[in-house]
Length: 424
Image (cartoon, rainbow, N blue to C red; front, top):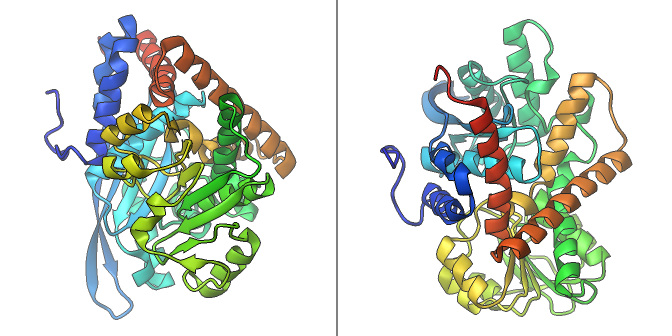
């Protein structure tokens, strides 16, 4: 079958977006295109039922997922998402983007992703822990430090990873820190992990701006999403002399033409659990975010944010995809037509998985590095990956996204070809 019957065929679904991206890269792959259907089919998809006793004694059931898209280059790697909109289609797409991402920056991993359809903010800490431990036990048959290594994503954090690591370890009778990454530092986590994705967005953005002749100092930056990714990227751009003029999250859209003070906004967010009401900026309409004057746009929220209609009105010169899959294919075409450079998610936000890789390596060796060393190693990998993709785009006369997919797909399909098909 050319299409998976259990995947939504909506042209705006995350899985459909991924398949369109694969279709676009196929003509560039030469003899390796014989193997490209490998990338259109997840290797394994597990759906689990999670019964949970609530604090009031009632029993509720939640649906969980773990998808391993491709393991040709190594164990699966990808986050765990707790969100009310999680479904199989989304998790499949996110796992596939992890396959591409790990290959694009040349990490020895395949792609995986997991999640539970739940609003974690409506659960008590006890309910969240019980949910996490049961989910971990259910997917424990396919995860492991040499099989599939989960990490935090939307709605999860280091505390959730600690519960996952402990549950897996208890079920195996020994402490196995390398089963997940994004753990607390004292439980085998890595320094620099929380800021790694946002730092990678800045590093790749700086490299592309330099090559495109765009000055960072004085540039107007717009950021959608003010979690770990958006906040750190914004802070580093501000530090480099840019003005962060507009920030949007689920609580508000803030604007200040002179630049929003990142330290003050972060302090406000920590104290108030939201950016809404921040006195150092004007609150504007949600949709006005896209028409604000900007030079650099950082979508760092959820997928499917840049539609064709929004792409038509953007004034930026560069889009740095801090989120996974924020741009629809027809919006990609519009941005290209308008000469706006898009640094694709599979390279731009790969700083997180890069430092997750470092955490896994450190856990395997039980030897840990300083934050300076981690940042130096990560910056080197991210810069080299961006340069490789930039040069491939010039060689093939294609967008940076297509170039990133060429680089990644060549690596994945070469591994698939040379490994062959078992049993043959």
